[in-house]
Length: 284
Image (cartoon, rainbow, N blue to C red; front, side, top):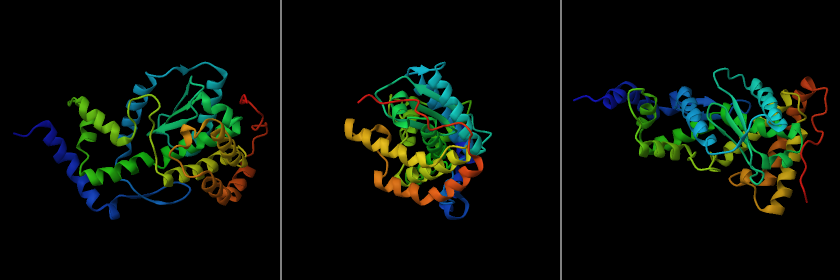
């Protein structure tokens, strides 16, 4: 007897399993800015749906600031950077988590972004926020989560659970849901965010610096952010934001290599107001 799951498999899974086997031909895309060739066979609507669901569930467990000046700044910078990305189908959202201890920011598929208040003193100013916002937007537009899931799906040998998630007539079992979240590297616990590879982190840095420059923020602030991040690491240990990232020196050199191009973009889009004025300070 043919079950709804079987029908879904026949209709959706077989073409994508074929795509996986022919990934070198049909599953290759290019990342923005760097033009790196990527292997990604997960449809964007699936990733946007997963990101939205996970984002809502995670924010339910966190204290979110919605009307503070800092929250307004975050949303203003987020909208400015995300416009550069030109992804109108993304439901861009930006949340400021009321947690002064955690130095972190993260992004889920489809442009669901969150910053912890603990990272604000490290950002110091609007330009610093522009770089980290650009970094997170870079993860989204480069489809890093889909690329990583594609790699895992190739090993695991199937994407059935993803299509079950989209089927309105099928209830996704809790254990399957947990497996899906684990595969995405998301989890549902506070502070467990999507860990990208070092290659993805370096690429997000490049995209972030280019996007901040196009948005009018001085790209030199990107390197200053990492200097402050390193200084903070010496005080309190490695910030969460750096825990799975390339080394500080690698990161700075990567940014320096792309800085001349970023400066040219900034020269054409420079904002009149001072975006490097201090907004947030640390207490030594």
